[in-house]
Image (tube, each protein chain N blue to C red):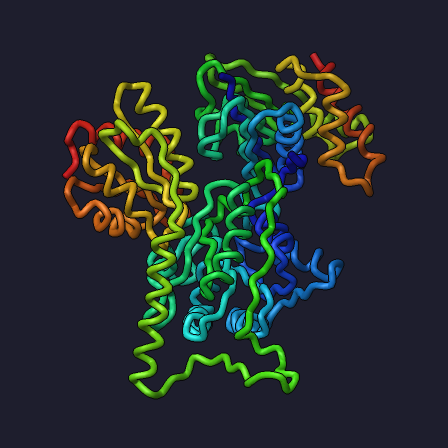
Length: 178
Length: 354
């Protein structure tokens, strides 16, 4: 059985919930069991935002991710708060534009991606989230255009269909970043 | 099977209500159930329904009373403090034998409390909530799919027994997204010959009222209502059993607590402890039968709750206190994690807790 627990965390406005939703939909399209649980309430307005995503071959028990297999830290407070919670052998994706320090743990794999800078240089400053998602899929060996497009089609509203390719390109940017 | 979509629990309730034929929604905003009202505000005008943001919770529940009197499917939703405000209306609905669907997406209390998930309105929901002798059918979903299914079921049961059905969810259930199939088998709404739909000069007036000043008559009304409640108890209890058959330690939990507990049961089994889970889906009527059966082989029960211990009383009653029942809980918007529940299972298995 395979179960992957993701924890996305960052500032409100960084697209934390959207990135999580994308992964959940991708799981759904691939006939996996999925759950997506956001933080909600006042912290959504400018403070920290986080969301738990579980993608599994089996029915999801608790939807709360307290010990993620994969932590996506989009700012320093998120890394400070959740670094120790990652399971041994887990993976941390850190936006190194906003997080200057290194991860202290030695029992996890870390990918530093200057996502905010890359997004800005790419002319899509709001898509740092999807740049990191691109990297996640690459690391998982699950990046193929077709599935990614299908999942994007679920989360990008029809009104903004033009954003589909923009998102896809941002994800490629992340996937190709070494 | 129709395609599954990802929906928030709150949205699933709203969409399921519309599918069930509900065209009247009255509410007042409160976190963490806001998406129910938001969804209704968006959808109802497009399908000829009525969404109305009332001036208060009290107004909203009385609008529910009005529409229900006219024989139409109607609902309101709120979160803990808002449900308290609706308490009077819930009692009047019961006193007038009116069907309605009321959703409580619970948050931490008492008072205004917080906005994070809680299950501390269990007493309020299962014991009535307002004044007088009455019950509501209380349904406790543990997934987004059940949020939708129990909404449809709630309308059916409300109409069948002329009672209020309450969906007792919590902030997690309301806010989380899971795949949901909205492919329901919708039963036709039953006739409501008692509804105040106009006599057309062809019948006697129908009167919907909860006032009854002659004690003998009011007694009879109460007795008859409780005969109906007996039928509900006999026919409508729902529960899920998980690894209960050979279990020594049995957890009782509903909603999000049951989800967390399932993880703990799996982990306990891996460690060689025979743990199991009984998940009440109807909280009223409480499913006594699986507890009566399980107490014959179980060494102990653990009630896992997001409250200071409310359902535990029903667990003790259902097991006649034949074996110890302990509480494993978090409150105030905190949620027990599987590790805490597992620790509790291990302690109880070792006989370490009273």
